[in-house]
Length: 585
Image (cartoon, rainbow, N blue to C red; front, side, top):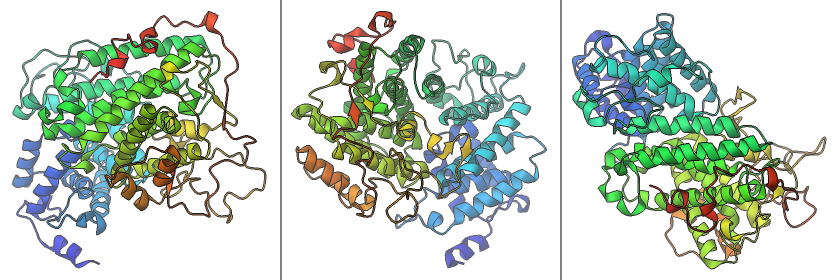
């Protein structure tokens, strides 16, 4: 056992004996600060000043304190900048102790159980223990449901305790929306429409709010970050519900895409201006707010990137049924613009974030989807388009790599983004300009289906939850598997486990992308720089099933006459759009 662990476990804090948890008081206070700065949902679960007072008085619930310490240990650095608590295993030890404490009383529902389970669910998700995370999330949501935490109290509605109760229900709702699967407890619950949204950060800190109630589906805003974060993830749940089928097969779906796009864009136009992160104006944003505002921004961009990419085979690696060519071209341009806008923010955000490791994991998913949209343009003969794509893909890869240092799912996305880069390096497509300047038949289908690639792009977390079965740690899909295998064919040249078809040496890739050295404009050289260091034993990403030099083929049918494009913004094709192409936010 490491000496550091023995030391930490042997120093009793000056807390009441009944709440002693074995963490030195100074370290405990540091961990609380780290928790509130790095957990996106911390102010939904706990009131910081109240929690710190309970810590100092020794009245804090041991399971809650241990869960807070466990999560914070993933990000807490000592005076030398080392993640000593994480590397020494203290976080896992504290999480296991907190789990045992909460499951000892799981049959006696109480709000502290909800808090502990939600924090631990995020901790084990961070670690890549997907099944454990899901069990804890389910217990938190079921307990909140049993306690009626989604109902508005008749009395004392303005008190801090009532606000916290509402916020904890919203924390359950957000963790449901994050995933592309559901416990189904809160699905279509009327409570989400009748429960007031969280007040502003200042009001919550002061413990009182006098403003009128604001609800999910109304146009008003409380002016608080969590009010808009909840709405953003509410829209994300709607997007995924629409695009989750392998194919969008009729024009009703096209109509629904236009309708949902309109709702999302109208919502974004109404949020307070200070919440819209503009790359050239980040210095005015309070640094402590940046990680959570970045999450709101990433979810907004991802909603529109995924929504519109779903009918563009070149971006989402799937078939799109009877989608009209014009609808596809409009959607391709919208997805391209939002992916580009997200990348431009990513390229500047590092200069302003207090700690880049505080970025929520969903941000890496948005960056990955942005890679899928923009990588095809890295081979463009148009220098401006090509250089923009190269610059943006590098920015996205940097985000993914940094988030992957803290979150296991982002580590998988790091592998998958290397795979996508390698495929297009082997099979470049010649896109002479932005989608609006291309022929409407340009956006093509695959020679072979690639459902796993499509799943990784359009569905958050589904790569570790295929067919509603969560993967065990280490058993997640390591590649995107676009090659149909013959019966009895080995999964890799050595006959071992499948590898990422183009898995990059991540240390080399990180050094290349983060070096700051000028990049060459030659796309072939650029691909080679980003993808250098491949293991020559890995399968060829070119795909042995391909008979030609291109994995994409022209889309050969059209139903323009019956397509309902009334809700699509035709201005995106001629530069007259005042909405989607103006880089909102």
